[in-house]
Length: 318
Image (cartoon, rainbow, N blue to C red; front, top):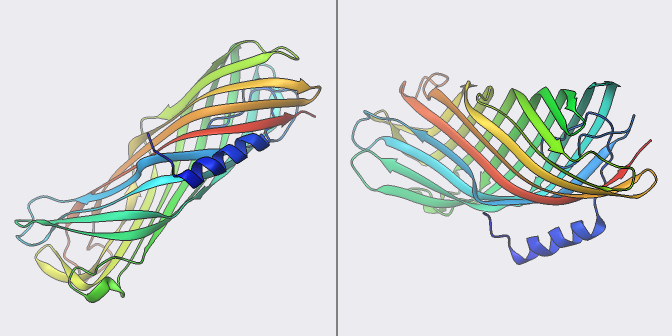
């Protein structure tokens, strides 16, 4: 689990002290974890909290059977932490069914990123960048109450994760790498299934819920581009960068959460949550497919994003 910095802990504590806002209505579930599934006829939900994980982002390209001296593996790894803000609202509801939509944005902190390039037949090269990540999501779900304490759901979720890499610590041969650049963008559009279990809510009682959503496939596309003034050897040829773009059709994702809430006064509910989410995306990418100056070499792309989160909410029903 990520060990947050002193300032991150203070910021997270302040956010919890403010008890961030969340509003609920029947048949709702917030995929990133937070508001519960027992809603009144209407409402709008806001929740926020701190998230973090050591080496929470891992981007890797690997290839086999390459000529000596060429890139066998290229990897960027950095910690993830920041503040998440999420909103959710019901669109329609008719017992035992409900339809809800929502979305969120993650204000990620800038973090050092360690890049490692393993060359065939030689030792690895490393350098540090400053990663500037950001992430967001949108989703819609159909929910169904199987039992007063059990709700199922089927939905579709869009995730965007991107990062610029700036200020490289070296240039793999060129002084300071001042002309080198790197950036990555991943978009995933994935269906999901889920279940949420909780005690039957009472007008003024304590509500406790746990839930999980996920799917064994991640669909979408990825684009990674890195320029290297000192050149890289790809497929036996010296080239000025490493471009990699393709669709994604493999992987998995899972979000799990536990939520506790208490109705403070009529129409207002206070709550807090803890959550964990992970996503793995994979694809085969031919780095020379979109650039005639780069040899046609197939690399396996693997991306993993993980984080723990804690946060608070306040519900206002209408």
